[in-house]
Length: 376
Length: 80
Image (cartoon, rainbow over all chains, first blue to last red):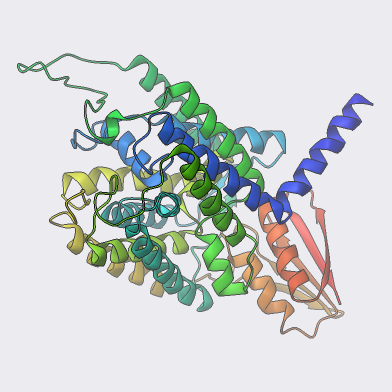
């Protein structure tokens, strides 16, 4: 009897989150929690940013040496593990992979390069807007254009091919890697210091700049777990929201984006974190061409890959190794973006940012033009 | 684009297993707005695709129902 009751409530929960309310509730909760994370210590308008936080993790692992953006962000770990928990609880955890993994890696790489030219993933683009940062409008414009280009290729029959069911181990790699990251955050191993007294790694933590601003790790982890759980249930996706309107006149996921912006705006107002303007916005630049073009590249790469970076984190937690490859591509891309001066800073585009966007667009075009589903 | 594996007795079967978003739902939409078949069956491998395909089909004016297959995937059947 007790078993039947819990089964019934599970089914009720299941149908609620796949109803039209699922993405709306998820977007609203992200919209409330992200500004709260800023209030609790995260950088401005960066309660959650999948691109920035993956970049901070790359820095903490020594994959780049931009000293101001190095920290192992528990939010990222939480999102993957929250999705894992939801996947296991609702029996949707399913190990699979093998749909053009190396192409997905490259798409993740250039999506990250584009996002770091703008300075934010789609989630942060909307959160920046909800904090009053009008530069975000240019990023969102670029995102819409990039998704539109991707939609043209989807209409032409673009496909990365089929994923196949895989052994459970394939699906557990990303969640276990996240647990390893959590251990590295808490243990913070240090092999020694150089002659000037600076830590030599292997894990680096910023002493100034955005990487030094963070909420207490337990809070950040719990917020990540909640968001990962909800996003797994509702399939919340900030790229799919725009793509589905263009491709199928379907507003299901778009409602989630709108809820995120509205609730983040209200929460920022309540917390006194809403500052309307263009100049002097936190972790942002006013180089509008590159705000647009960076996100054109990111939106294009996200659309070819099947979702926004938050969605890929979630899918990597429910056993999808192809999304895992995309996430690892983003991690490596973040390392390169800073080592090769492709990432922007508050001063504007990096020295090689524009060239990197050009190369990334050419690579995405080549992928879009050449990959179609083969009859099997 | 996914394969048409069977068309007999006005029944069209399309296998979208393993395809990324939005391919299963977009395929469903394209097929359901153009086919003459009385029954269209779409195979997918995840609950997400199952929900998306059902939503796309219902938007196109079909009535659909989904059932789980032995391999853990789903069969979504649409009837006029």
